Image 1 (tube, rainbow, N blue to C red):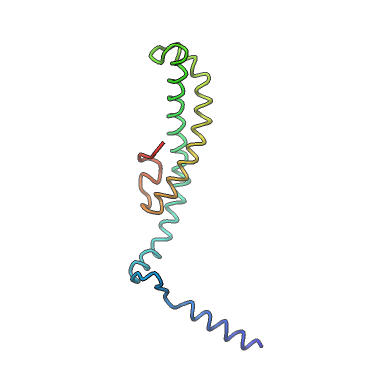
Image 2 (image 1 turned 120 degrees about the vertical axis):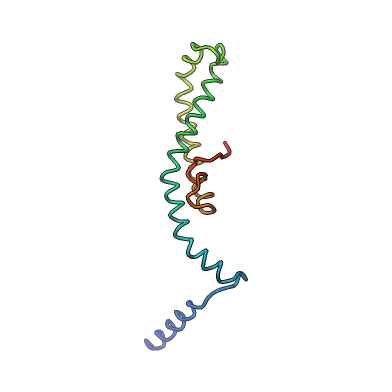
Length: 132
């Protein structure tokens, strides 16, 4: 019983070592993709760790400026200092909340989408242009 199980497991292990070219691609691209996997995994991980705070900072500043301008227009115009000053009491907390949520979303999205395609690029670290 034990010998037959060992023989079956050995045959299974030897069959797993055969190359699988089911997609019809050549072995060169498969070898390149296999070699690039650790680089891409490291790129995505580092982009999540370093790019998410960048996206948080970008999105919170964008939202604070946007909300300050909108709220100041409702109480006197965004060209003058007093409406901007009083609008900032409400626009800063709102911008921080909305910008944090968007920054977390865009930081992860940029890291995963761009980190796998273009490892260690500016777009994967949220420094490039992305849709807002």
